[in-house]
Image (cartoon, rainbow, N blue to C red; front, side):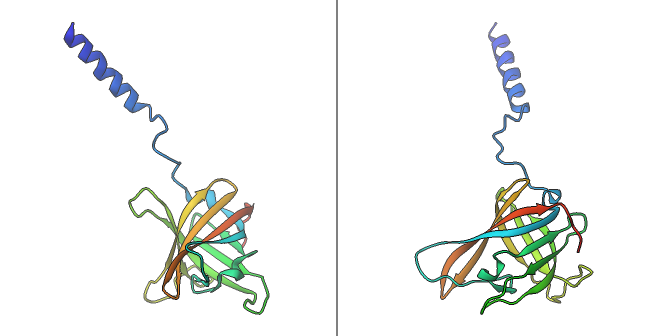
Length: 170
């Protein structure tokens, strides 16, 4: 009788382990989720109180990214970031990128990009690139966290991107 109880308990544990009860956390992002055109709708700084200044991805000051358009093509990793904002700090410009996901092994996913030419080939001979943690990604919203520092003080820049369309015309 005791052996039967142990056998039933073992079967119960095996059955429960196989159901994947949803405790594994959020679904892993797929490149297909990013297909299309995205617009940066919000930029927020997270860190200790103080002055924040960030040049994102060696493209422009973080404020220039508000309203920028990102076109992301999942099957080949090509993309483009268009800064259309004009101010005393910003000027309209287009930047081709090659992008992908990176998984650092801690359960998180990062968006990584390298500057590229119009054909998607990296333009930095040293292979330098940039990474941003993906805090949230669903069908219509992505929040990226870009680690930055200014005058020795570390902080994060949060970019909120909203999907505009599934169009991927470059």
